[in-house]
Length: 639
Image (cartoon, rainbow, N blue to C red; front, top):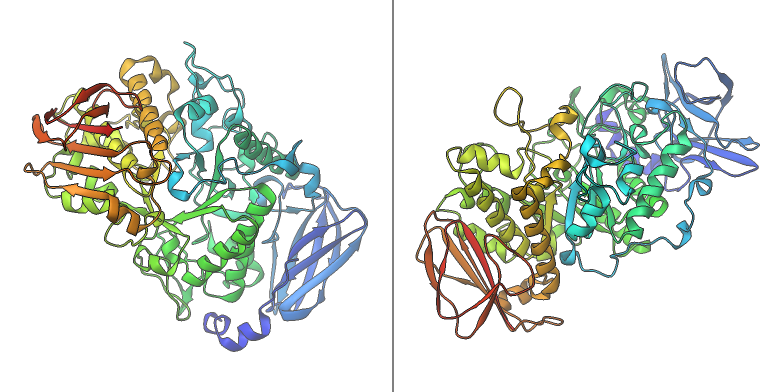
Protein backbone atom coordinates (compact mmCIF):
# COMPACT_ATOMS: atom_id res chain seq x y z
CA UNK A 1 0.00 0.00 0.00
CA UNK A 2 2.93 2.35 0.51
CA UNK A 3 3.29 2.93 -3.25
CA UNK A 4 -0.47 3.19 -3.69
CA UNK A 5 -0.84 5.79 -0.91
CA UNK A 6 1.69 8.07 -2.61
CA UNK A 7 0.41 7.57 -6.16
CA UNK A 8 -1.16 10.47 -8.08
CA UNK A 9 -4.35 8.46 -8.64
CA UNK A 10 -4.89 7.75 -4.94
CA UNK A 11 -4.21 11.34 -3.96
CA UNK A 12 -6.47 12.74 -6.67
CA UNK A 13 -9.35 10.56 -5.49
CA UNK A 14 -8.84 10.64 -1.72
CA UNK A 15 -7.48 14.06 -0.79
CA UNK A 16 -10.05 15.80 1.41
CA UNK A 17 -9.79 19.58 1.73
CA UNK A 18 -12.43 20.28 4.38
CA UNK A 19 -11.64 21.74 7.81
CA UNK A 20 -14.16 19.60 9.74
CA UNK A 21 -12.34 16.32 10.43
CA UNK A 22 -12.81 15.12 14.00
CA UNK A 23 -15.76 16.07 16.21
CA UNK A 24 -17.44 19.42 15.60
CA UNK A 25 -19.67 20.25 18.59
CA UNK A 26 -22.71 22.45 18.84
CA UNK A 27 -25.38 22.54 21.60
CA UNK A 28 -27.83 20.73 19.32
CA UNK A 29 -25.66 18.18 17.52
CA UNK A 30 -22.13 16.91 16.98
CA UNK A 31 -20.71 16.10 13.56
CA UNK A 32 -18.17 13.27 13.56
CA UNK A 33 -16.01 13.05 10.46
CA UNK A 34 -13.21 10.57 9.78
CA UNK A 35 -10.84 10.15 6.84
CA UNK A 36 -10.45 6.40 6.30
CA UNK A 37 -10.51 5.61 2.55
CA UNK A 38 -9.42 1.97 3.00
CA UNK A 39 -12.23 1.13 5.44
CA UNK A 40 -15.17 -1.09 4.49
CA UNK A 41 -17.14 0.06 7.53
CA UNK A 42 -16.70 2.73 10.21
CA UNK A 43 -18.53 3.39 13.47
CA UNK A 44 -18.40 5.84 16.38
CA UNK A 45 -18.38 4.46 19.89
CA UNK A 46 -19.61 6.79 22.65
CA UNK A 47 -18.41 6.37 26.24
CA UNK A 48 -19.32 7.98 29.56
CA UNK A 49 -15.69 8.40 30.69
CA UNK A 50 -12.24 8.72 29.21
CA UNK A 51 -10.88 5.76 31.15
CA UNK A 52 -10.14 2.96 28.64
CA UNK A 53 -10.51 0.36 31.42
CA UNK A 54 -14.08 1.40 32.20
CA UNK A 55 -16.90 -0.74 30.77
CA UNK A 56 -19.12 2.24 30.05
CA UNK A 57 -20.08 2.08 26.40
CA UNK A 58 -23.14 4.24 25.68
CA UNK A 59 -23.71 3.47 22.01
CA UNK A 60 -22.09 2.23 18.81
CA UNK A 61 -23.27 4.29 15.85
CA UNK A 62 -22.58 3.50 12.18
CA UNK A 63 -21.00 6.18 10.01
CA UNK A 64 -21.97 6.87 6.41
CA UNK A 65 -19.38 7.07 3.59
CA UNK A 66 -18.88 10.55 2.20
CA UNK A 67 -16.54 12.35 -0.21
CA UNK A 68 -12.82 11.68 -0.76
CA UNK A 69 -12.63 8.68 1.54
CA UNK A 70 -14.34 10.31 4.50
CA UNK A 71 -17.02 8.92 6.80
CA UNK A 72 -19.47 10.98 8.81
CA UNK A 73 -22.17 10.84 11.46
CA UNK A 74 -24.44 13.55 12.84
CA UNK A 75 -25.59 12.83 16.38
CA UNK A 76 -28.38 15.00 17.78
CA UNK A 77 -28.17 16.43 21.29
CA UNK A 78 -25.55 18.10 23.45
CA UNK A 79 -22.59 15.70 23.65
CA UNK A 80 -20.20 18.07 25.43
CA UNK A 81 -18.12 15.94 27.81
CA UNK A 82 -18.92 12.62 26.12
CA UNK A 83 -15.93 10.48 25.10
CA UNK A 84 -15.66 8.63 21.82
CA UNK A 85 -13.49 6.48 19.55
CA UNK A 86 -13.59 5.44 15.90
CA UNK A 87 -13.74 1.79 14.83
CA UNK A 88 -12.89 0.72 11.28
CA UNK A 89 -13.19 -2.61 9.52
CA UNK A 90 -10.97 -3.43 6.55
CA UNK A 91 -11.64 -6.98 5.37
CA UNK A 92 -10.84 -9.18 8.37
CA UNK A 93 -9.03 -6.34 10.16
CA UNK A 94 -10.87 -4.31 12.82
CA UNK A 95 -9.31 -1.55 14.89
CA UNK A 96 -10.55 0.91 17.51
CA UNK A 97 -8.61 4.14 17.90
CA UNK A 98 -8.70 7.65 19.22
CA UNK A 99 -9.65 10.38 16.77
CA UNK A 100 -6.44 11.71 15.11
CA UNK A 101 -8.05 15.17 15.25
CA UNK A 102 -9.05 14.83 18.93
CA UNK A 103 -9.18 18.21 20.65
CA UNK A 104 -8.81 16.56 24.03
CA UNK A 105 -8.86 13.10 25.55
CA UNK A 106 -9.33 11.13 28.71
CA UNK A 107 -6.49 9.60 30.68
CA UNK A 108 -3.52 8.41 28.60
CA UNK A 109 -5.10 9.66 25.39
CA UNK A 110 -7.03 6.51 24.49
CA UNK A 111 -10.47 8.06 24.11
CA UNK A 112 -11.23 11.43 22.52
CA UNK A 113 -13.73 13.81 24.10
CA UNK A 114 -16.40 15.97 22.52
CA UNK A 115 -15.83 19.45 23.91
CA UNK A 116 -17.22 22.96 23.84
CA UNK A 117 -13.86 24.69 23.44
CA UNK A 118 -15.25 28.15 24.23
CA UNK A 119 -16.17 26.94 27.72
CA UNK A 120 -12.47 26.37 28.47
CA UNK A 121 -11.37 29.94 27.73
CA UNK A 122 -9.93 31.93 30.68
CA UNK A 123 -11.36 35.33 31.53
CA UNK A 124 -10.17 37.89 29.00
CA UNK A 125 -9.17 35.25 26.44
CA UNK A 126 -10.80 37.17 23.59
CA UNK A 127 -8.33 40.04 24.21
CA UNK A 128 -5.29 37.82 24.73
CA UNK A 129 -2.45 38.43 22.25
CA UNK A 130 1.26 37.93 21.73
CA UNK A 131 2.95 40.58 23.91
CA UNK A 132 5.96 40.64 21.57
CA UNK A 133 4.09 40.52 18.29
CA UNK A 134 5.65 43.77 17.11
CA UNK A 135 9.21 42.43 17.31
CA UNK A 136 11.39 41.17 14.50
CA UNK A 137 12.48 37.56 14.94
CA UNK A 138 16.04 38.75 15.62
CA UNK A 139 14.70 40.82 18.56
CA UNK A 140 13.66 37.62 20.35
CA UNK A 141 15.54 36.02 23.23
CA UNK A 142 14.35 32.40 23.49
CA UNK A 143 14.46 30.36 26.72
CA UNK A 144 13.96 26.59 26.39
CA UNK A 145 12.18 24.92 29.32
CA UNK A 146 10.63 21.62 30.38
CA UNK A 147 7.39 22.24 32.32
CA UNK A 148 8.29 19.82 35.11
CA UNK A 149 11.91 21.00 35.48
CA UNK A 150 10.82 24.51 36.39
CA UNK A 151 8.88 23.68 39.53
CA UNK A 152 9.54 20.15 40.76
CA UNK A 153 12.56 20.88 42.96
CA UNK A 154 11.56 21.62 46.59
CA UNK A 155 13.57 24.86 46.48
CA UNK A 156 11.30 26.30 43.74
CA UNK A 157 8.66 27.44 46.23
CA UNK A 158 6.06 26.65 43.54
CA UNK A 159 2.80 25.03 44.65
CA UNK A 160 1.62 23.39 41.38
CA UNK A 161 4.75 21.31 40.92
CA UNK A 162 5.20 19.82 37.48
CA UNK A 163 2.02 21.42 36.15
CA UNK A 164 0.97 24.00 33.56
CA UNK A 165 -0.26 26.17 36.42
CA UNK A 166 3.15 26.05 38.11
CA UNK A 167 4.68 27.87 35.14
CA UNK A 168 2.64 31.01 35.88
CA UNK A 169 2.84 31.23 39.66
CA UNK A 170 4.26 34.58 40.74
CA UNK A 171 5.89 35.64 43.98
CA UNK A 172 7.65 32.30 44.39
CA UNK A 173 11.09 32.23 46.00
CA UNK A 174 13.76 29.97 47.39
CA UNK A 175 13.77 29.53 51.18
CA UNK A 176 16.22 32.45 51.31
CA UNK A 177 13.89 34.72 49.31
CA UNK A 178 15.45 34.67 45.82
CA UNK A 179 12.83 34.78 43.01
CA UNK A 180 12.15 31.54 41.15
CA UNK A 181 10.00 30.36 38.26
CA UNK A 182 8.12 33.00 36.31
CA UNK A 183 9.59 35.92 38.26
CA UNK A 184 13.09 34.60 37.56
CA UNK A 185 12.38 34.43 33.82
CA UNK A 186 10.84 37.90 33.74
CA UNK A 187 13.78 39.41 35.60
CA UNK A 188 16.18 37.69 33.23
CA UNK A 189 14.61 39.55 30.33
CA UNK A 190 13.62 36.77 27.95
CA UNK A 191 10.99 37.51 25.31
CA UNK A 192 9.94 33.96 24.33
CA UNK A 193 9.49 30.81 26.40
CA UNK A 194 10.07 27.65 24.37
CA UNK A 195 8.27 24.76 26.06
CA UNK A 196 9.46 21.22 25.43
CA UNK A 197 6.54 19.09 24.16
CA UNK A 198 3.23 19.90 25.84
CA UNK A 199 0.99 17.92 23.47
CA UNK A 200 -0.18 14.48 24.68
CA UNK A 201 2.83 12.17 24.73
CA UNK A 202 3.03 8.47 25.51
CA UNK A 203 5.96 7.77 27.81
CA UNK A 204 4.34 9.01 31.05
CA UNK A 205 1.48 6.95 32.48
CA UNK A 206 -1.17 9.46 33.53
CA UNK A 207 -2.79 6.90 35.85
CA UNK A 208 0.35 6.78 38.04
CA UNK A 209 1.13 10.41 38.67
CA UNK A 210 1.56 9.68 42.37
CA UNK A 211 4.85 8.01 41.34
CA UNK A 212 7.85 9.90 39.96
CA UNK A 213 7.94 9.74 36.15
CA UNK A 214 9.87 11.83 33.68
CA UNK A 215 10.28 12.20 29.94
CA UNK A 216 11.11 15.09 27.67
CA UNK A 217 8.03 14.20 25.62
CA UNK A 218 9.41 13.60 22.13
CA UNK A 219 7.01 10.66 21.70
CA UNK A 220 3.70 11.95 20.31
CA UNK A 221 0.43 10.15 20.98
CA UNK A 222 -2.17 12.83 20.20
CA UNK A 223 -0.84 15.87 18.37
CA UNK A 224 -3.76 18.24 19.08
CA UNK A 225 -4.30 17.47 22.76
CA UNK A 226 -2.43 18.94 25.78
CA UNK A 227 -0.39 16.54 27.91
CA UNK A 228 -2.48 15.20 30.78
CA UNK A 229 0.35 14.80 33.30
CA UNK A 230 0.80 18.58 33.28
CA UNK A 231 -2.85 19.09 34.28
CA UNK A 232 -4.34 18.74 37.75
CA UNK A 233 -6.81 16.08 36.48
CA UNK A 234 -5.80 13.93 33.48
CA UNK A 235 -9.09 12.00 33.66
CA UNK A 236 -11.16 15.06 32.72
CA UNK A 237 -10.46 16.15 29.16
CA UNK A 238 -11.60 19.72 29.77
CA UNK A 239 -9.11 20.34 32.57
CA UNK A 240 -5.94 19.92 30.52
CA UNK A 241 -7.34 22.29 27.86
CA UNK A 242 -8.39 24.94 30.37
CA UNK A 243 -5.13 24.86 32.32
CA UNK A 244 -2.91 25.03 29.26
CA UNK A 245 -4.84 28.09 28.08
CA UNK A 246 -4.45 29.61 31.56
CA UNK A 247 -0.70 29.06 31.29
CA UNK A 248 -0.50 30.74 27.88
CA UNK A 249 -2.53 33.71 29.03
CA UNK A 250 -0.54 34.01 32.26
CA UNK A 251 2.71 34.13 30.31
CA UNK A 252 1.28 36.68 27.89
CA UNK A 253 0.08 38.81 30.79
CA UNK A 254 3.68 38.83 32.04
CA UNK A 255 5.16 39.89 28.70
CA UNK A 256 6.40 36.47 27.58
CA UNK A 257 5.49 34.87 24.25
CA UNK A 258 4.97 31.10 24.04
CA UNK A 259 6.74 28.75 21.64
CA UNK A 260 5.59 25.16 21.37
CA UNK A 261 7.99 22.30 20.63
CA UNK A 262 6.31 20.06 18.04
CA UNK A 263 7.39 16.63 16.85
CA UNK A 264 5.66 15.80 13.58
CA UNK A 265 8.59 13.80 12.19
CA UNK A 266 7.71 10.60 14.09
CA UNK A 267 5.25 9.15 16.62
CA UNK A 268 5.58 7.15 19.84
CA UNK A 269 4.65 3.76 18.36
CA UNK A 270 3.86 3.58 14.65
CA UNK A 271 1.59 0.54 14.84
CA UNK A 272 -0.40 1.99 17.76
CA UNK A 273 -0.65 5.56 16.46
CA UNK A 274 -4.33 6.33 15.88
CA UNK A 275 -3.91 7.54 12.28
CA UNK A 276 -1.99 4.39 11.36
CA UNK A 277 -4.55 2.14 13.04
CA UNK A 278 -7.42 3.72 11.12
CA UNK A 279 -5.59 3.85 7.76
CA UNK A 280 -2.89 1.20 8.22
CA UNK A 281 0.60 2.76 8.09
CA UNK A 282 -0.49 5.69 5.92
CA UNK A 283 1.15 8.23 8.27
CA UNK A 284 4.59 6.57 8.16
CA UNK A 285 7.25 6.03 5.49
CA UNK A 286 7.37 2.31 4.63
CA UNK A 287 9.47 0.78 1.86
CA UNK A 288 9.27 -2.95 1.10
CA UNK A 289 7.68 -3.52 4.48
CA UNK A 290 10.45 -1.66 6.36
CA UNK A 291 9.61 1.52 8.26
CA UNK A 292 12.09 4.34 7.60
CA UNK A 293 14.12 5.33 10.67
CA UNK A 294 16.06 8.49 9.89
CA UNK A 295 14.73 9.91 13.14
CA UNK A 296 16.28 7.14 15.22
CA UNK A 297 12.87 6.79 16.86
CA UNK A 298 11.66 3.80 14.86
CA UNK A 299 9.46 5.54 12.31
CA UNK A 300 9.50 8.57 10.02
CA UNK A 301 6.44 10.57 9.04
CA UNK A 302 5.37 10.58 5.38
CA UNK A 303 4.72 14.32 5.23
CA UNK A 304 4.90 14.19 1.43
CA UNK A 305 1.51 12.39 1.32
CA UNK A 306 -1.40 14.76 0.85
CA UNK A 307 -3.40 13.84 3.96
CA UNK A 308 -0.34 13.77 6.24
CA UNK A 309 0.63 17.15 4.80
CA UNK A 310 -2.89 18.41 5.50
CA UNK A 311 -2.85 16.94 9.01
CA UNK A 312 0.37 18.75 9.95
CA UNK A 313 -0.80 22.06 8.48
CA UNK A 314 -4.19 21.74 10.20
CA UNK A 315 -2.57 20.86 13.51
CA UNK A 316 -0.18 23.82 13.59
CA UNK A 317 -2.98 26.19 12.59
CA UNK A 318 -5.16 24.73 15.36
CA UNK A 319 -2.58 25.44 18.07
CA UNK A 320 -2.07 28.99 16.82
CA UNK A 321 -5.80 29.67 16.56
CA UNK A 322 -7.15 27.90 19.63
CA UNK A 323 -4.27 28.25 22.11
CA UNK A 324 -2.73 31.53 20.90
CA UNK A 325 0.68 29.89 20.46
CA UNK A 326 3.25 32.46 19.27
CA UNK A 327 5.87 30.17 17.75
CA UNK A 328 6.75 26.59 16.84
CA UNK A 329 10.01 24.71 17.15
CA UNK A 330 10.09 21.64 14.89
CA UNK A 331 11.96 18.57 16.06
CA UNK A 332 14.08 16.98 13.29
CA UNK A 333 12.39 19.14 10.67
CA UNK A 334 14.91 17.86 8.13
CA UNK A 335 12.69 14.77 7.84
CA UNK A 336 9.71 16.85 6.66
CA UNK A 337 9.29 18.15 3.14
CA UNK A 338 9.74 21.76 2.09
CA UNK A 339 6.20 22.10 0.71
CA UNK A 340 4.64 21.12 4.04
CA UNK A 341 6.78 23.63 5.92
CA UNK A 342 6.07 26.45 3.49
CA UNK A 343 2.34 25.71 3.45
CA UNK A 344 2.00 25.64 7.23
CA UNK A 345 3.98 28.88 7.62
CA UNK A 346 1.77 30.55 5.02
CA UNK A 347 -1.43 29.18 6.54
CA UNK A 348 -0.58 30.35 10.06
CA UNK A 349 0.66 33.74 8.87
CA UNK A 350 -2.67 34.47 7.19
CA UNK A 351 -4.21 34.93 10.65
CA UNK A 352 -1.12 35.34 12.84
CA UNK A 353 1.61 37.11 10.84
CA UNK A 354 4.06 37.36 13.75
CA UNK A 355 4.21 33.67 14.71
CA UNK A 356 7.82 32.42 14.52
CA UNK A 357 9.08 29.10 13.19
CA UNK A 358 12.37 27.24 13.56
CA UNK A 359 13.66 23.69 13.80
CA UNK A 360 16.45 21.14 13.62
CA UNK A 361 17.50 21.10 9.98
CA UNK A 362 19.89 18.18 10.14
CA UNK A 363 20.26 16.09 6.97
CA UNK A 364 19.26 12.49 7.75
CA UNK A 365 18.60 9.46 5.56
CA UNK A 366 14.89 8.78 5.21
CA UNK A 367 12.83 6.73 2.76
CA UNK A 368 10.63 9.37 1.13
CA UNK A 369 7.72 7.78 -0.73
CA UNK A 370 7.70 10.24 -3.63
CA UNK A 371 9.98 12.92 -5.00
CA UNK A 372 10.33 15.96 -2.73
CA UNK A 373 12.90 18.23 -1.12
CA UNK A 374 13.42 18.15 2.64
CA UNK A 375 13.58 21.10 5.04
CA UNK A 376 17.26 20.96 5.93
CA UNK A 377 19.76 23.71 6.72
CA UNK A 378 21.18 23.43 3.21
CA UNK A 379 17.70 24.00 1.79
CA UNK A 380 17.08 27.05 3.97
CA UNK A 381 16.72 29.32 0.90
CA UNK A 382 13.69 27.21 -0.05
CA UNK A 383 11.89 27.91 3.27
CA UNK A 384 11.82 31.69 3.78
CA UNK A 385 10.31 32.56 7.13
CA UNK A 386 11.59 29.38 8.77
CA UNK A 387 14.81 29.39 10.84
CA UNK A 388 17.21 26.59 11.72
CA UNK A 389 19.38 25.76 14.71
CA UNK A 390 22.97 26.83 14.10
CA UNK A 391 25.05 23.86 15.20
CA UNK A 392 28.06 25.54 13.60
CA UNK A 393 28.20 28.18 16.33
CA UNK A 394 27.44 25.58 19.01
CA UNK A 395 30.22 23.20 17.99
CA UNK A 396 32.71 25.98 17.22
CA UNK A 397 32.26 27.52 20.66
CA UNK A 398 32.02 24.42 22.88
CA UNK A 399 33.44 21.60 20.73
CA UNK A 400 31.93 18.86 18.60
CA UNK A 401 28.76 17.41 20.02
CA UNK A 402 29.88 13.94 18.91
CA UNK A 403 33.06 13.92 21.02
CA UNK A 404 32.52 15.06 24.59
CA UNK A 405 36.18 15.92 25.20
CA UNK A 406 36.72 17.81 21.93
CA UNK A 407 37.78 21.41 22.40
CA UNK A 408 35.91 24.43 21.11
CA UNK A 409 36.95 28.07 20.96
CA UNK A 410 36.05 28.80 24.60
CA UNK A 411 38.04 25.79 25.81
CA UNK A 412 41.14 26.48 23.71
CA UNK A 413 40.66 25.25 20.12
CA UNK A 414 42.63 27.55 17.84
CA UNK A 415 41.01 26.60 14.51
CA UNK A 416 37.49 27.93 15.05
CA UNK A 417 37.86 31.66 14.36
CA UNK A 418 36.99 31.58 10.66
CA UNK A 419 33.73 29.70 11.27
CA UNK A 420 32.87 31.96 14.19
CA UNK A 421 33.33 35.09 12.08
CA UNK A 422 30.56 33.91 9.77
CA UNK A 423 28.37 32.91 12.70
CA UNK A 424 28.86 36.25 14.45
CA UNK A 425 27.57 37.95 11.33
CA UNK A 426 24.53 35.66 11.29
CA UNK A 427 25.76 34.06 8.10
CA UNK A 428 27.18 30.57 8.71
CA UNK A 429 28.12 28.71 5.54
CA UNK A 430 24.66 27.17 5.11
CA UNK A 431 22.67 30.36 5.72
CA UNK A 432 22.02 33.48 3.63
CA UNK A 433 19.73 35.37 6.02
CA UNK A 434 20.23 36.23 9.73
CA UNK A 435 16.52 35.66 10.40
CA UNK A 436 17.12 31.96 9.65
CA UNK A 437 19.88 31.22 12.17
CA UNK A 438 19.10 30.31 15.77
CA UNK A 439 22.31 30.80 17.73
CA UNK A 440 22.87 28.64 20.79
CA UNK A 441 25.51 26.93 22.85
CA UNK A 442 23.26 24.58 24.85
CA UNK A 443 19.80 23.04 24.70
CA UNK A 444 18.02 20.06 26.25
CA UNK A 445 19.98 17.69 23.98
CA UNK A 446 23.49 16.60 24.97
CA UNK A 447 25.41 18.02 27.93
CA UNK A 448 24.63 21.30 29.60
CA UNK A 449 27.12 24.05 28.75
CA UNK A 450 28.99 23.86 32.05
CA UNK A 451 29.14 20.05 31.92
CA UNK A 452 30.44 20.10 28.35
CA UNK A 453 33.16 22.55 29.35
CA UNK A 454 34.03 20.42 32.36
CA UNK A 455 34.39 17.32 30.17
CA UNK A 456 36.69 19.16 27.75
CA UNK A 457 38.95 20.79 30.36
CA UNK A 458 38.54 18.74 33.57
CA UNK A 459 41.79 20.04 35.06
CA UNK A 460 40.78 23.69 34.92
CA UNK A 461 39.46 25.42 38.00
CA UNK A 462 35.76 26.03 38.54
CA UNK A 463 36.49 29.75 38.16
CA UNK A 464 38.09 29.19 34.74
CA UNK A 465 35.11 27.09 33.61
CA UNK A 466 32.73 29.86 34.61
CA UNK A 467 34.80 32.32 32.56
CA UNK A 468 34.59 29.95 29.57
CA UNK A 469 30.84 29.68 30.05
CA UNK A 470 30.50 33.47 30.06
CA UNK A 471 32.82 33.89 27.07
CA UNK A 472 30.61 31.60 25.01
CA UNK A 473 27.45 33.35 26.21
CA UNK A 474 28.74 36.77 25.19
CA UNK A 475 29.58 35.48 21.72
CA UNK A 476 26.21 33.98 20.84
CA UNK A 477 24.22 36.70 22.61
CA UNK A 478 26.02 39.42 20.65
CA UNK A 479 25.88 37.55 17.32
CA UNK A 480 23.49 38.49 14.53
CA UNK A 481 20.53 36.11 14.33
CA UNK A 482 18.23 34.75 17.05
CA UNK A 483 19.71 33.93 20.49
CA UNK A 484 18.48 30.77 22.21
CA UNK A 485 19.38 29.34 25.61
CA UNK A 486 18.59 26.30 27.72
CA UNK A 487 16.79 27.01 30.97
CA UNK A 488 19.33 27.08 33.78
CA UNK A 489 22.32 27.89 31.58
CA UNK A 490 22.22 31.34 33.20
CA UNK A 491 22.81 29.72 36.60
CA UNK A 492 25.46 27.17 35.59
CA UNK A 493 23.06 24.25 35.23
CA UNK A 494 24.68 20.86 35.66
CA UNK A 495 23.45 17.27 35.48
CA UNK A 496 25.97 15.23 37.47
CA UNK A 497 25.65 11.48 37.23
CA UNK A 498 25.50 9.85 40.71
CA UNK A 499 27.93 7.24 39.35
CA UNK A 500 30.40 9.91 38.25
CA UNK A 501 30.62 12.17 35.23
CA UNK A 502 27.60 13.93 33.76
CA UNK A 503 24.31 12.77 32.27
CA UNK A 504 24.27 13.76 28.62
CA UNK A 505 20.76 13.10 27.30
CA UNK A 506 18.54 13.04 30.37
CA UNK A 507 15.29 12.41 28.46
CA UNK A 508 14.07 9.87 31.02
CA UNK A 509 16.32 10.58 33.98
CA UNK A 510 15.02 11.39 37.44
CA UNK A 511 13.87 14.74 38.75
CA UNK A 512 17.09 14.80 40.76
CA UNK A 513 19.01 15.03 37.48
CA UNK A 514 16.63 17.24 35.50
CA UNK A 515 15.11 19.69 37.96
CA UNK A 516 16.33 23.25 38.17
CA UNK A 517 18.09 23.63 41.53
CA UNK A 518 16.91 27.08 42.55
CA UNK A 519 18.78 27.04 45.86
CA UNK A 520 22.06 27.24 43.92
CA UNK A 521 21.29 30.93 43.49
CA UNK A 522 22.17 31.35 47.16
CA UNK A 523 25.84 30.82 46.18
CA UNK A 524 27.68 33.78 44.69
CA UNK A 525 29.08 32.16 41.50
CA UNK A 526 25.59 31.10 40.42
CA UNK A 527 23.89 34.35 41.38
CA UNK A 528 26.62 36.40 39.69
CA UNK A 529 26.30 34.36 36.50
CA UNK A 530 22.54 34.93 36.48
CA UNK A 531 23.15 38.67 36.81
CA UNK A 532 25.72 38.44 34.01
CA UNK A 533 23.22 36.82 31.61
CA UNK A 534 20.61 39.38 32.59
CA UNK A 535 23.11 42.09 31.68
CA UNK A 536 23.88 40.47 28.32
CA UNK A 537 20.19 40.37 27.43
CA UNK A 538 19.62 43.98 28.44
CA UNK A 539 22.65 45.04 26.37
CA UNK A 540 21.41 43.18 23.30
CA UNK A 541 17.96 44.74 23.67
CA UNK A 542 19.51 48.21 23.97
CA UNK A 543 21.40 47.97 20.65
CA UNK A 544 19.45 47.41 17.42
CA UNK A 545 22.74 47.10 15.56
CA UNK A 546 23.07 43.61 17.13
CA UNK A 547 19.68 42.58 15.73
CA UNK A 548 19.81 43.39 12.01
CA UNK A 549 17.49 41.50 9.66
CA UNK A 550 19.34 41.32 6.34
CA UNK A 551 22.68 40.09 5.11
CA UNK A 552 23.18 43.37 3.25
CA UNK A 553 22.85 45.39 6.47
CA UNK A 554 25.23 43.11 8.33
CA UNK A 555 27.91 43.04 5.66
CA UNK A 556 27.72 46.83 5.55
CA UNK A 557 28.06 47.29 9.31
CA UNK A 558 29.95 44.35 10.89
CA UNK A 559 33.65 44.07 10.14
CA UNK A 560 35.82 41.23 11.54
CA UNK A 561 39.17 42.41 12.91
CA UNK A 562 42.23 40.29 12.25
CA UNK A 563 43.95 39.32 15.52
CA UNK A 564 47.47 37.98 15.82
CA UNK A 565 46.65 35.38 18.45
CA UNK A 566 44.80 32.32 17.05
CA UNK A 567 42.53 32.28 20.12
CA UNK A 568 41.33 35.83 19.65
CA UNK A 569 38.77 37.43 17.39
CA UNK A 570 37.23 40.90 17.32
CA UNK A 571 34.51 42.83 15.49
CA UNK A 572 33.89 46.49 14.74
CA UNK A 573 30.23 47.47 14.24
CA UNK A 574 29.09 50.84 12.93
CA UNK A 575 25.94 52.12 14.58
CA UNK A 576 24.06 53.92 11.83
CA UNK A 577 20.87 51.86 11.95
CA UNK A 578 17.42 53.10 13.04
CA UNK A 579 17.05 53.31 16.82
CA UNK A 580 20.74 52.75 17.61
CA UNK A 581 22.14 55.13 20.24
CA UNK A 582 25.80 54.15 19.85
CA UNK A 583 28.05 55.45 17.12
CA UNK A 584 30.09 52.24 17.14
CA UNK A 585 30.59 48.97 19.01
CA UNK A 586 33.85 47.09 19.40
CA UNK A 587 33.83 43.49 20.65
CA UNK A 588 36.87 41.39 21.54
CA UNK A 589 36.93 37.69 22.43
CA UNK A 590 40.06 36.25 24.01
CA UNK A 591 39.94 32.49 24.61
CA UNK A 592 43.64 32.17 25.36
CA UNK A 593 44.92 31.39 28.83
CA UNK A 594 47.00 34.57 28.86
CA UNK A 595 46.17 38.26 28.68
CA UNK A 596 46.51 39.72 25.19
CA UNK A 597 46.70 43.29 23.84
CA UNK A 598 44.65 44.87 21.10
CA UNK A 599 44.31 48.39 19.74
CA UNK A 600 40.93 50.07 20.01
CA UNK A 601 39.78 52.19 17.10
CA UNK A 602 40.30 55.92 17.56
CA UNK A 603 38.32 57.68 20.25
CA UNK A 604 36.99 57.14 23.75
CA UNK A 605 35.14 53.90 24.48
CA UNK A 606 32.86 52.81 27.33
CA UNK A 607 33.51 49.26 28.52
CA UNK A 608 30.09 47.67 29.24
CA UNK A 609 30.94 43.95 29.33
CA UNK A 610 33.96 42.12 30.70
CA UNK A 611 34.49 38.74 32.37
CA UNK A 612 32.80 39.76 35.63
CA UNK A 613 30.07 42.24 34.71
CA UNK A 614 27.63 42.83 31.86
CA UNK A 615 25.02 45.49 31.23
CA UNK A 616 24.32 48.80 29.59
CA UNK A 617 26.23 50.98 32.09
CA UNK A 618 29.89 51.86 31.56
CA UNK A 619 32.28 49.95 33.82
CA UNK A 620 35.22 52.14 32.77
CA UNK A 621 36.44 54.27 29.87
CA UNK A 622 39.24 53.15 27.57
CA UNK A 623 41.15 54.31 24.53
CA UNK A 624 44.16 53.32 22.45
CA UNK A 625 45.76 49.94 23.23
CA UNK A 626 44.10 47.79 25.88
CA UNK A 627 44.82 44.47 27.54
CA UNK A 628 42.17 41.73 27.33
CA UNK A 629 42.42 39.35 30.31
CA UNK A 630 42.63 35.60 29.78
CA UNK A 631 39.36 33.81 28.88
CA UNK A 632 37.43 37.03 28.57
CA UNK A 633 35.13 38.92 26.26
CA UNK A 634 35.03 42.71 26.29
CA UNK A 635 32.37 44.86 24.65
CA UNK A 636 32.98 48.56 24.13
CA UNK A 637 30.54 51.29 23.13
CA UNK A 638 31.34 54.65 21.57
CA UNK A 639 28.44 56.93 22.39
